[in-house]
Length: 144
Image 1 (cartoon, helix red, strand yellow):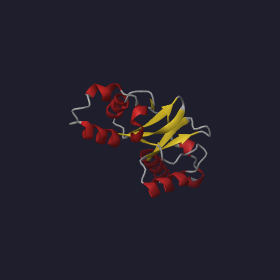
Image 2 (cartoon, helix red, strand yellow):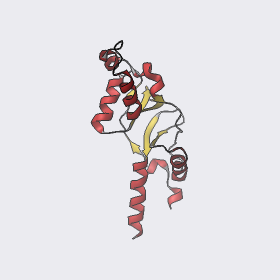
Image 3 (cartoon, rainbow, N blue to C red):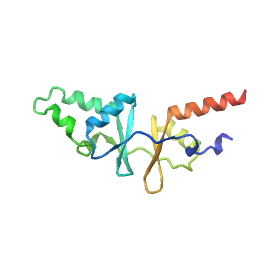
């Protein structure tokens, strides 16, 4: 039944991520190449937060005409120096959480995705609205 479906059954595993010591340009390059809207930021294997295409774009636009800042700084600077760009306030999901909890969080906070972690905050995957839509579409087709 739908309400018994666990997050681990529908989440995306082996997701792209960046380490907090990676450069911001690396995160930007992965987001652009893979056409993502967000990428998890880790410190080792621990989830730190989410970096979004929108926040990188806003930062780039704000600094595009800043003559005191060079493009090299943007390219080589580690993500940790852009801590204000990392969304650290997302709710977390756990593999054993119900799909209902995820739907409620997506609806209430208008998230595009949520990280799925273990009890030590190691990233296990993400659950996106697309994952949910694909799951619901599959269930609807099975009802026919």
